Image (cartoon, rainbow, N blue to C red; front, side, top):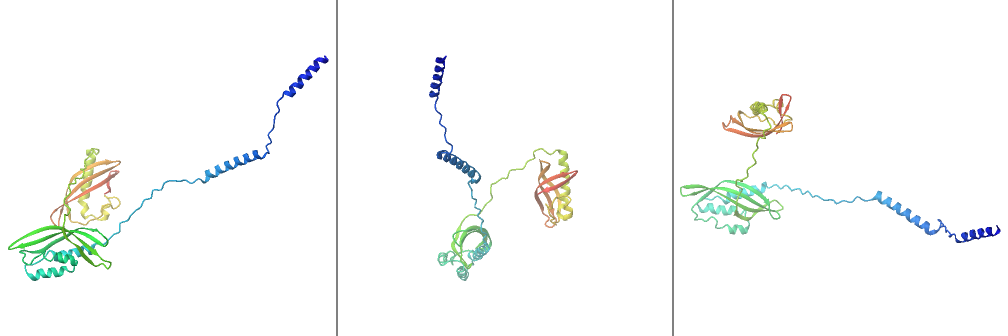
Length: 305
């Protein structure tokens, strides 16, 4: 029995001696505190950046350049007065001499020399200016304008006369005091002619039935008979918001010309011409209208023009 207890005590001693030692880390050591401080600072900085982050985005700057209005009436008048002298002369020496003397008030010295023999004293024709039209005035260099114009000259040779139409361009210099001088001689050019543009024809889309078409025809016929002489009060029954104002003309209604109707939402668009007789000129006056109509109950009304 004594031997068994000794063996038991011996085994316990061995187990006790073989048990691994456990080391506890002291949380107050400096390295651990430093790590906790670093973690806290990182977290605080992340929160700060989140609330104070700058929302960056690209700004596309749009520059609006306003065109400066330039009053060119003086330039136009200057060119017109020049043309009245330049394109007119009689068949005598005095007329031609007077023409060159007057042109000195419009041309630089260089251009005066250039124009000395443009109308010779032995020229067989006389000329008078019937009309001048200014087609364009465009800024050129500093204080200069390019002016495009056309002239109608009545040319007389012997007992025959004819009208000659020509177009030219000149340049006018304007100094700080507003005084002007031509710095480019009349140079042949072209003026606008008829464009070959053809607008797209408006067609009916078939959304308006025959009953509605007849209603609108009757409404528009009644309105356009009244329209030329109607007062504002009378027009207000047919027209919303004074879209069409009184014109006070002595026109006699003839007919609606080719009205085209299309539905748009709860409204009807109308494109048509209206044939009138002008009582003063006795000529036919044809006006074109693009209208939008709306029906309220049983009453039609013009709501847009």
